Image (tube, rainbow, N blue to C red; front, side, top):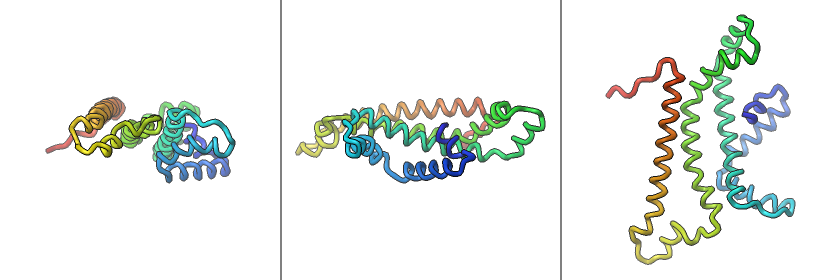
Length: 193
């Protein structure tokens, strides 16, 4: 939310800095961001490297904070000024206008992209696991390449990971669906087939 507020700042300098920061984060792969957080502080400032898991979590938090802030910003800017003006005519304060008039329509508009980003976040945690593992050579893909005979046991880590991530993704989708149905006054009907 902080990034969203800064990108909507009245001060042009702050807004421009945030636009450049958002452009950089959105334009670079998450794996590269993890590597930058892990290696660059040591290279530039001669600091000891962060633990791998801390670097991965830091990069993921920054990356998704940027994406979520853009979703929040778009949701806020999609609400017509007329709703804000109507609240002012009723004598509501800016805080009351936001919470009583604007918040529900904003949440309704940002639900689908927030669902997608939350699912992507779960999938991207695989990058955190890979980069935080000191012995990536001994797991998954590398062990398959070293073995001359491909066996089902070589694929079991992938199957287990797929099952876990699919289960988490399904749960997240269900939670977002329940939230959307509780917030939306007229829920969209399911397919008519």
